[in-house]
Amino acid sequence: MEKETRRISLPGVTGAVLCMAFIPIILINLVLIASSYINPGELPGVLGIKPAVVMSGSMEPVIETGDMIFIRSTDPGTLKEGDVICYLLSGKAITHRIVGVTTGEDGQPRYITRGDANNAEDRMPVTSEQVQGIWNGGRIPGLGHKIMAIQTPMGMVLTIICPLLLYIIIDIWLRRRADRQQMMQAVMEKARLEAEIKAMKQQLESGSGTPGGEGKTTRS
Image 1 (tube, rainbow, N blue to C red):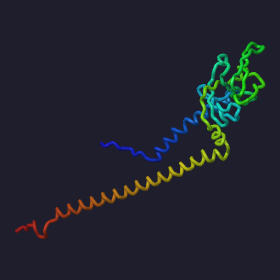
Image 2: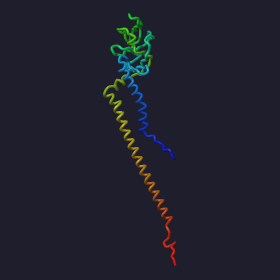
Image 3: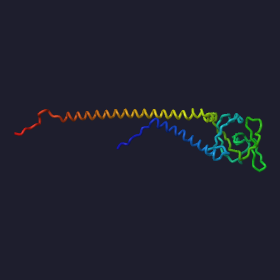
């Protein structure tokens, strides 16, 4: 018995590619959202990596406005002068360089920070509880601007809803075209089979026919 071979269709390939592209993004976003609700006082992240969008030029030219940077979780006790850290101040994430380390009245370290482009140190020392992680150079230039644009209503329409609708329309069109082609092939196959059957019938009839009067016998 012959095994039926499956045809690889363009809609199937397109759907698989989109799933491979969007499923990890959706899962990461879900993890980030869940993390922000579970730990509202911390920068959300995945596997110790916390993405952050740079909204100011205080660290230029090392980090530009609009960059997407990646903060890695770290033990605050290992931080030293020269490290670039991300910390929270009144719910806002700030990424600045440590220019000094002191000790507070509670015996815990305090980090004096300053933006590379700033002329003065930050007003308040940073505590260990405020530290969200260390920046080791991971960044994607300009990606932050694009992410902020996507988060607007118009950005969501242009980057998510429109491509999704376009995919659905193309998928429906391709499937209907494939159905029409299959239907035409079925009609042509049926016509071919009917022609073969008709030819076989004609061949059988012509081969079994006998001349008139021959082969008959009479009883005397």
